[in-house]
Length: 234
Image 1 (cartoon, rainbow, N blue to C red):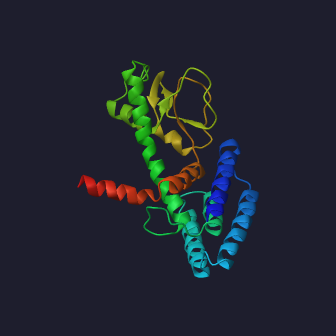
Image 2: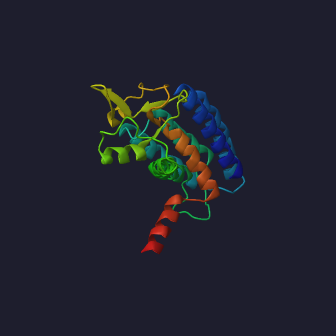
Image 3: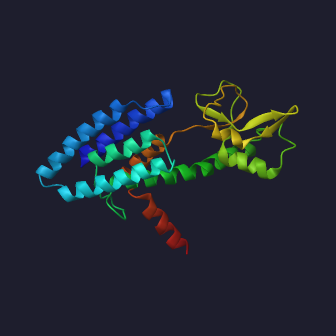
């Protein structure tokens, strides 16, 4: 199992690098990692550390789940392939905290939770900028406070230097005035490089799946931790 999760982490790391660099992941990543992972899983079955039924159940459910989410346009083809490859490498994993032992589903769930937490991170960062007296809303004085709050949850104002690759604009110029425009998030081709603009990083889901796998290794199923926190608050 240890080698299985290492295989998944290496696979998702390589896929994240490709996706951030070229915005696509070559199939060789899934073929190589899936083959190695499947061989390790077969060895676990042969040595008695894993039941064949567990592999069939996890891989089958994950494949149906992955393909279904793809056709529902929840994510792209690379994300579906990542889940299928993960099911061959690490079909079952039992961390200290978990509801079910299907590792690929836990990885996706953890990644989704971390993705949802991103607006909180943006808000905290922007609040720190405001406290420091930095004019992050300079030029947007005419914009409503609700739009400013939304921008703080969705991105940040970049520095004066060139923006790093794959950032989407959150602003446009309309009649000579700067306006927030969140509709630009729908166009992945609208990447900006000019500094001093409100932007949001166009991070692919693969990156959050990698973070979800790391969270699984370190903390287990984040869903369980969230439910426990809600229960204690109640």
